[in-house]
Length: 100
Image (tube, rainbow, N blue to C red; front, side, top):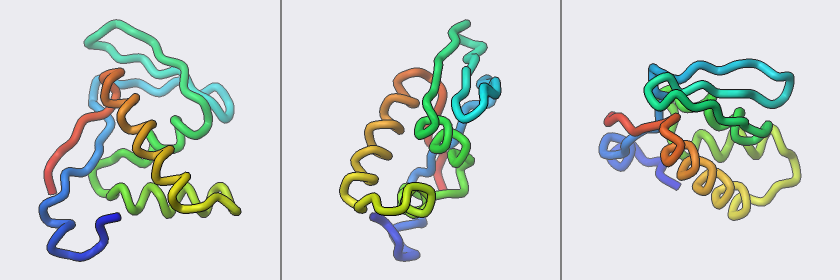
């Protein structure tokens, strides 16, 4: 994970696109992507990660938050889940990357 200040300056941070509307469904969510006119269903984990994509948090922040939420999870597994979910969110047009 990237944690030192110099790497953080160069890191692109995930952010939820402005055209994305989150519809609360308990622990899960429906997400409407206005530009594409699509609705995506997110499980708890994907919703959790999407809510943290605010262009202020690093991937390391996401991993730490997930490990706090899911006690007992090991870091390599959580990191792989965060990577996979971020890739899905980007491909679905829900998240993009800004620059720090």
